[in-house]
Image (cartoon, rainbow, N blue to C red):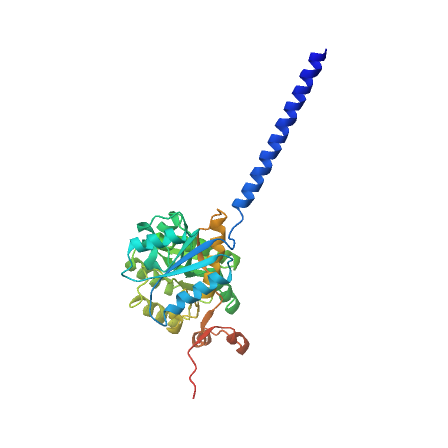
Length: 331
């Protein structure tokens, strides 16, 4: 009888010990997971590599770095790259500073990573991305503007537009078109996609689009980083046809507005840096980032084109644009 009571107490003590062991392990796991998701702290180091360029072009990278510093608590370490930079010196710099995240600014620095060995998570910014790079699961913020802003502003300027045509190379801009498709839906516009393999096919497609009936409801979107869009031969012809047919042309390239396109977006370098800072925090938390278009509200408009399209832009509306063409000369 006493033996049975003792065995029962031992069994209860064992179960109680197992319960507390389970409770402790669960609590430890919760704390550990929480620490893993803590994100950037004041002790975190972020390294930013950027090309060494002359003034005033260096302001482009200076503003991006300013944006990064605006939105992070981490220590931001910067290093400029010259063409004569030695891999061994860069490697030693990384070993000495041991950053948690390495941000590479500009397309010319993409090749730097392949020559380096670092445990740092890699983030790219201020560059263009192809579909192949997206499939490689690169993380970064593209210099290509987010189409949602462009589409929303077009809808405000000309709510009659129901269709936006876009000619693109699938292996280069397929990832952007996928995002644009969603953006168009939110703007209550249908994206009409025209995938092409080369400049010759693109020229044929642009001629077809120029002959599209009901130009009042159809617009054309030109891409900034598009291998099939020849800037010297195709763009002047596209814009001339658009003017003749009173067709609305918007572009991801602000230089096209000066030449006659209606609307585009300027890069917001500080905001681009802020987006990189947010992406850095996600990487430290082991969250996915992927490739994002550049956010910007710095709109460019051609008022001469708007007038030709019979669009009414009030002085109040005009004042909200970051850049207006034709430029007004001071007499």
